[in-house]
Image 1 (tube, rainbow, N blue to C red):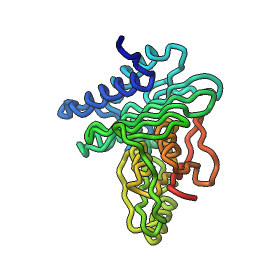
Image 2: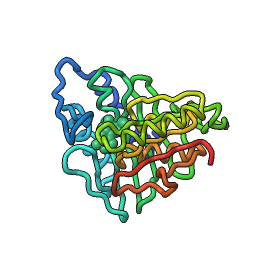
Image 3: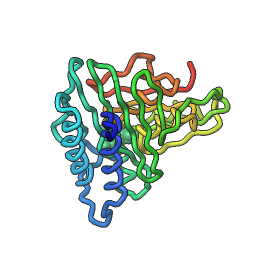
Image 4: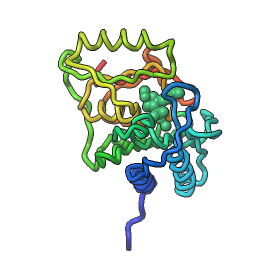
Length: 250
Ligand code: 2AM
Ligand code: CA
């Protein structure tokens, strides 16, 4: 008898299909809209992928609610089962053809992240974690690095749509630049978190992120042995944006 697919396997299959859709997108015909302001973009692909994920995820788990970045599906409650989804994390990269974007899907049950899936279709890397069961990339276990910050890479996001955070962001980046080997800025917070989980970088920070940017990646980091809080050391919240600090060691 054929083995029953787990929910996590079904979610990964759906996310992979959406990732390939993005990778093969007809980028010559993008409809690009600005949302709140500078570098806060949306295309028809963000909307189409979100709808495909919404339908597919609710088929896999009909008793769950859906929270997605696009449109009016952003209501979260600390009680109940919620998918928290970013159809394209790294939309500016997608628009520019920079080929570094991801699909991010988390399942949060009673305010605790249970599943996280982040897929980079350009590198064909499927990152995923289940609470208490470790983190993986393409089937291989992930572990944060053991290196101290002085031998480390720091990845960060610039929150370009929040001008009031620019100075603090670049001051922090400069401070880390002096302490670490070097810094990087990729454009996808979800993939930055996976980069820390995979031990390719030692620390990630961004001063303003929404739950769909970090919910899946944060679980992947903690399941890979890392630590994720906001920049003041508090646990992350799924009902409002916050800063995010992920690191390999305290
Ligand atoms: P996005 O590509 O899904 O919009 C880049 O610094 C990171 O910030 C990306 O993960 C990006 O996600 C996210 N981001 C973009 N606009 C944002 C906004 N208005 N609020 C919070 N995060 C945002
Ligand atoms: Ca997005």
